[in-house]
Each structure stands twice: as structure tokens, then as C-alpha cells.
Length: 280
Image (cartoon, rainbow, N blue to C red; front, top):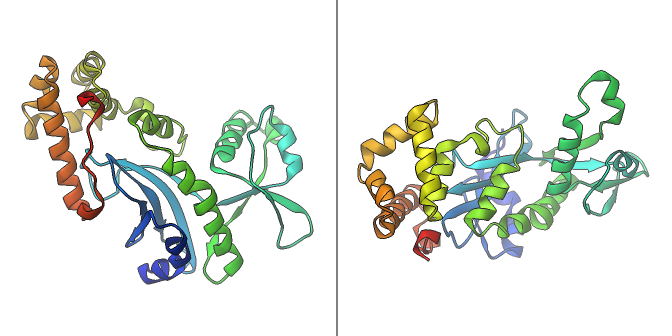
């Protein structure tokens, strides 16, 4: 397993070239922090020399743990033979061609959006008779004993992941990101009723938020039912404020939650308290 010291040493070039990123332990995140903690978690692997990179976006008002319940997507280095792309009816612009280390055949770097398009395509070709229609991609692991792979990791982080994370500014942007994560998400955003209820409240869509609240009460399945129980126990005034459409009271509750989360994360110096849409 790689160590935090190895993470720190390896990411020095990324930090030097990107003044808006901060490394805390294994988490490389963007500053300033406004409503969302966005970054890349550099996780360990069963292989002592490999990193696992996970793009994460966490609503800090959801004080559910130290980066544990962020909306996240595991990312490796993905490359594809140009000929494979002809299997897609439509494909977005992808990265530059690179020489394959074991041959003279050029590979195309698969960007974040491109990989999602490939995964969506492949989900429709899972039966054996359709296997030939799958787009085959090559995975490159981030191995500290292979400098070339670490250079490719830098390229992915700086040319693809960080630019995409920087674009996630509004709650609508967050919802788009969360909804597109795909089948690897244990609790997909589209079925995460509690989370969507809070998002609707933060946006000032109180009728929608109340509708979602009612749906949880009527069918309190895990985890939404349990989270609603905790919310009611710890913040008994929240629902009354929602029913009354009391924007000032709801905004205060959300800001208090954010401040609590920021303290637990230890990121006070990177947080900028900004209005919620319900205040605008």
C-alpha cells in the first residue's frame, strides 16, 4: 500500500503547477471551498506501489463523515485503439494520441466524459452475442515504480479531472455530476431521496422538497429513512421552517451545518461562506 508520504512527494509537481489546489493527507482538493468540497482522493491499492484516484464532490452541508459519503467516481488511466471508436454511434472529442509503451500503435487517451460514453455503450452490449460490439479499453495503473504511468496520472488530473471539477459551481452542476456517475454508485443520486430533498430546499423549491419529505415518511427505506430520523432528532425546527417557507431560518440552518462540517474537515482557512440559492 502506498503511504501518505509517497502521495505528498508524488503530487508536488501538480501542486506547484496548480495554485488553486491543496493536499491534505490523501485528498487533493480545490480552493476556495464554496458549498462543495471538490477534489481527488489518492487511495491505496492492494499493490504496495499503486495509487487509486477517485474524483469526489461532496456537499459540505451533508455532515456525514470526513469525505466518506462524497459523490465519487474511481478513475484510472483509460486508453483506446482509435478503431474501437467506430463502434460508437456518436462519440465526444477525446484526448491526444499517445504511443503505446509496448508497440508502435497509437492509443487515444479516454477522457472522463468519453469513458462515460463508452460505459453507457457497453452496458447495452453485455450479452455474449453482442460482445464483439463492446468498445475495449486499456487500463493503465498508477505505479510509483513506473515514472511513465505517473506522468500519465498527472496528465489525467491536470488536463481532464481538475478542469471538469472547476466547472462544478452551482447546485445544478452538482446534480448533473452526481446523476452521471453511473452503475458504480452504491446509492445513485436519482434514488437518493433525502439528498434531493435537501438540494430542493437549498434551491428554494419548497413544494418539491416537501413532496420528497412526504415520500420518505411514507416509505422510510434505508438510507433516506434513517437520515430523516436523524434530521428530525437533531434539527426539529427544520421541517417547520420548510412548511412555512421561512428562507431566513432555513438559510441559517444550512450555514450552521456547513460551518460544522468545515470544522470537522479542518478546512476553515479554505472555506468561503456564500449564499444559498434560496437566499438569492
